[in-house]
Image (cartoon, rainbow over all chains, first blue to last red; front, top):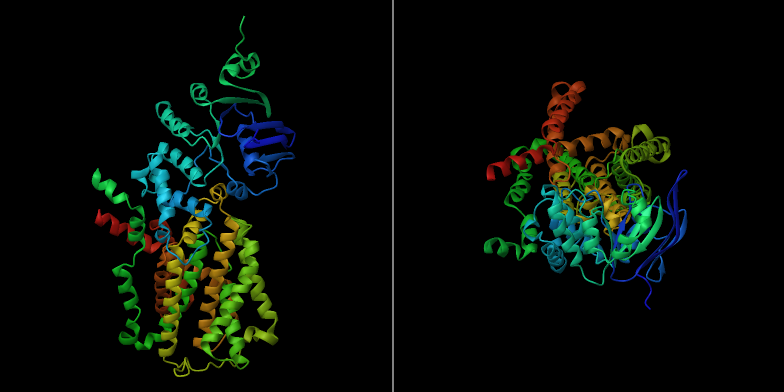
Length: 251
Length: 329
């Protein structure tokens, strides 16, 4: 058995008296497509913030592969392959799409400190960035400023930036947030098409999307992991029906 | 469709075209030679403009590109000025090595302070840089045994440039020297901002939150660019000392930090030529207005500043750029 791609042990975080993560034990095997679902305020985004180092946990540990990364800075975690996207577009408005992705490629290749060579001289970095944009159907828009891209294209650029870091584990915080339903399928098709070497965990509210694209589902409620299982198990789980799917009771 | 695909098949070509040397740049630099022939009586002013432009270029690196606001940038200008002045006063009047000393002193202090700078943003950053500037001014004021205090540093004697050209009252050597240093530094800065490092700086300016999420260590980038900017500011300060053969506390004054910020905003921050254009406009305006009414000339600068910020948020260069692209389309 190989070790999991990402795991948390007894992760705990409180804001004052409000516990937003309670004893979170998570184990993501390599290559799975996990959906993280739960009602608003369940602590899903907080969990991503904790795992990526944007929040410091009060207690508990985080492992990427065999390594304890609990104390690493966010950028060091990214360098090791733990990468996230943001629910609210967190992009570089006045960079072109190509510049933004090239920047991420340069950071990964440790070229971003180079100041004596021109950017176009690093042709392979530029080409790699362009290739990522093409794979997400952003190729023709690569020279447009980020802020001039359509909203759905900006959501794709969120993913493009993450892919440029060559992630091992990709945490997608509502990748289709704000995207019309008919467009979100295309966005998730792009996610489903990612390499099987990448472990993906995504937060999503649309149950059709969740059941279609996730191989496993985690349900969070009030900072705690309620249940984890295959889509069929989750669909049949009485607890989930009660606390998450609107509290609808049968019989 | 094939035409579009053909263009984008080599995306680095597009980037190359974006950063290539333009004809208008050659025209600009040729125009900097005009004072030699057209108005030799203004060579001293021209030299001051070149020095101010160099100082503004330094601020542009951190403010215009990396988005680091500083209200204490005169600290490095002053460090360079006093270092060059002290070297000359104590027997080493050779300009080029003196300038290297000025650059090194400012760079060292800049590097030390960059560890503080890289931790802050926004208001905290403005206050920190302001505090540093005030601190250094008072230190220079009280250490009058070293700096001459409010009387200024006396006895700065420069050796001829390259052993031949004296810094005289007419300013031939001064402007030649300042202009060459400005041009060479400009070429370096131009190279820097078009490099991967320059792109990373713009990334920090555009979204400091996203940078760690793409694996970037913003703090390392900020420390580096702050040190480079300090070196350039130190060179500018050293040039002023060497071309005027005096140093006063004014080199460290808050007014100088504020002026260079105004110059950059007027010309257009983050536009490479913004500081240069701003310096020309500011210095010529000051020369003209203060001839008419020396006490109130900031009234006009204030008016100009408000007008530019309201009507041309990207500075005069940004406005020109917009005009050109509108005509082009």
